[in-house]
Structure formats: structure tokens, C-alpha cells
Image (cartoon, rainbow, N blue to C red):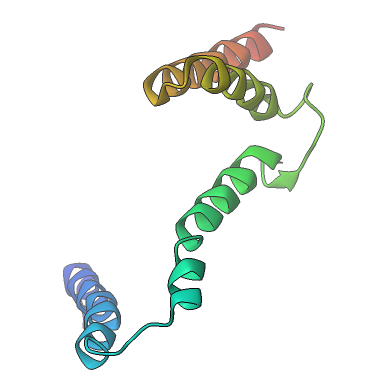
Length: 109
């Protein structure tokens, strides 16, 4: 019987091999400029998708109502702070504080 720790290590090894093996195979390959430019957009796209999924889904369902989905209001407050301060730290602090206060107010009422 395989124990949980073995599954974790085997999964980690497999995940690492999926990244390392192609690097060794194609380490001398020339990447065309257009593909290189296209690849620079992947992290931004993935991060934006993760944020959108977290922001618009409330309790496992798609919800655009700001009176029910409090993450939308907190996200708008965070976006305003990010625009005016240009500080990631302040954006995170204000966003977490806004969501906490909104959730506490929702529980009280």
C-alpha cells in the first residue's frame, strides 16, 4: 500500500520532470522572437484568470451582485488604492482589511 508521503514525493518528482526534461532536450533550440514575445504574456494571463475566478465566484456560484458577493466591493476598493498609491503592500493591506470589515458587517446584519 502506498503511503501519503510516497504519493507526495512521487507527484513532486513527476511534476519536476515535466519541467526539467524539456529544458534539457531543447536547451540549444532557437526560439523565434514572436514566440518569445508571446510567452511573456502567459504569467499575466494566468494571474488575471485566477483573480477573476476568485473575485466573481461566491460560495461556488457565479455572482455579480455586490450586495451578496462582497469580494467585488473589496476588489474595487483595492483597485482604487492600487491606482492612487501604486503600492502593492498598501493594496494588499487595504484589500484584506476591506474584505474583513465587509464580512464582519454582513455577519452582524
